[in-house]
Length: 161
Image (cartoon, rainbow, N blue to C red):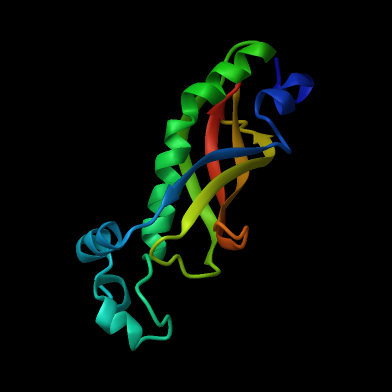
């Protein structure tokens, strides 16, 4: 069956639904440890140096924020797969096909609690792989004041039939 002939695919992939993946409070030692290993810019590794920067205080690397989003995203897979069973054969995650338009819109400071979300927006069948589609999702992170701090589009191959 062609996935476009199956109206349950949108429901199976939760098209249009925002899923809260989880929340994380960023603390100074974690921010500095991540930055020392992956993004050792002065405003991520030293409170004193961060005070002299445009940020005015220690803040997490954008890559740290993105890595936390991915951590929660992968942790959500079992529940997402189980939910898809209600609409037939469960989905299977394939490899990521990339991301687009990654934006870090506000700094993530020490003590901020960030909530990570994913909203499946659209899919298209892959003619080279029957039963598979390319899923496009809006991925976001919000601070405790509900301000958007990060967003991007994720593209993932999904086995749907």
